[in-house]
Image (cartoon, rainbow, N blue to C red; front, side, top):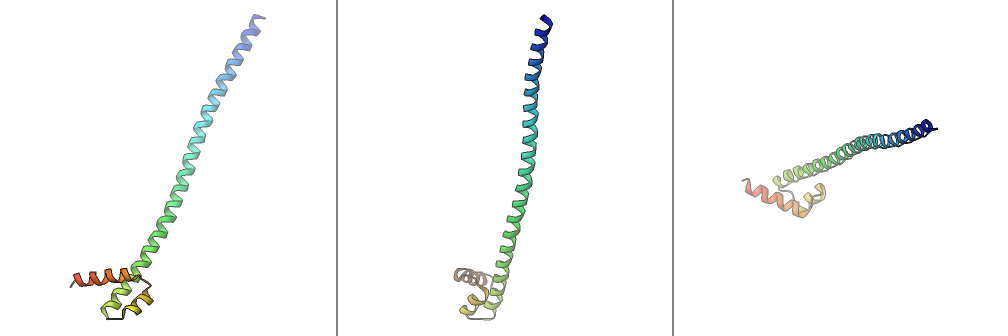
Length: 102
């Protein structure tokens, strides 16, 4: 009877220890998996955002380059604004830029 009480106590302690270790290992694996998934998502989102921003900047640079050429050719402001779709403020910035480079 004494042995069975000791066995029971030992088994119960073993179960507690096993649960504790299981939780610890599960938490560790969950954290690793979560961090990996978070990193993958962050990279994907960052690349998409960077690509979109780069394309947007490239489009604007193309419009500004066309506007510079049109200004150099003496095209009317209305025509420059219509064809390049830049803002009047951007056109004025180009005029100032052009004036300071002479």
